[in-house]
Image (cartoon, one colour):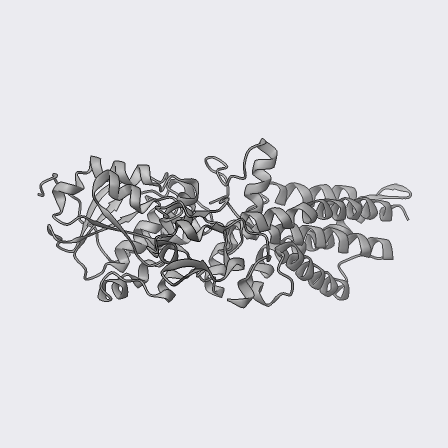
Length: 98
Length: 333
């Protein structure tokens, strides 16, 4: 995956290990292998692989993970700038976006 | 008939219309109307112990799932994602806890099956809180593999997705599939901009010359489209091999590579200032289009793209503007 690492030291992912109950859900849902388990607690192994999709935070029943999630998409950010909203890929019916 | 009424059976093979439909949506034709009616579907000969697979109502998602379930008896629960694929819908929250819970209830899943498990695609996790679904419905969410094609292996392993099944990759073929949609990003500008350049190319010191328009027609059009395609076709195709991490920088590299080729092919300019102008325009355009591919990629973060755009977008605009001004000036030299 080395050709597929994006900018380093930018992501907003935070893990509060004190709240972690070791359920492994973050390891399961992360599509980029960011998390691991050490001594029955979650740890961030590859922070720069994170794409801020928010799956880990959403599925953490203890609220131990926070991340400002959103679309990593230039068109979506331009959309947000033009409309004065948060970045959104919701550009309405019939337009070219996901 | 089941406890909850008649349920349609679906095939696990793609027929001609499924294949043709898949090709069409990849080219952005009717992509937002390619939908399945939400509800429960049967695959094979499912019973009260059969597993339930959940997906969104984008027909391409549904088709991939049912094809992967060949030889398996199971239920498919299609939820309303407004015709959007699983991952994007999860990002927007339409493939979310609320809709999953609502569908479990209105389709009486608890009466259809005896067990209390549902299998969701892993990429729906940004929208669904498994523990909340459990709290509200009693159903345990099990996240399956990223790709439907791994479902059989996932089942054979006792509902366990291996590390490889859980990781999202971005191989060459997948990148190619996403190119056509970006091709149409420019929409009617793809027609208007070349025509404006054609009209402007007639100006010179002695007034306006239609001959000049005809002389330049091929060149300006080739140059413009080369910049566009360098950004939205060439860059995605060779993405991991282009130096730099920023997509805008990758696009600048491919744009200038193409511009160098055009320089030797003789389509750029006749004067130094015209050549420089084309380098600025092609570079800026290619960089912008490449930056837009962040939205199609599987590994860019919002924070990263915002950081990249803060410097890249102004640069792209300045490059294009200087290029256009220089090119117009070069008409009169």
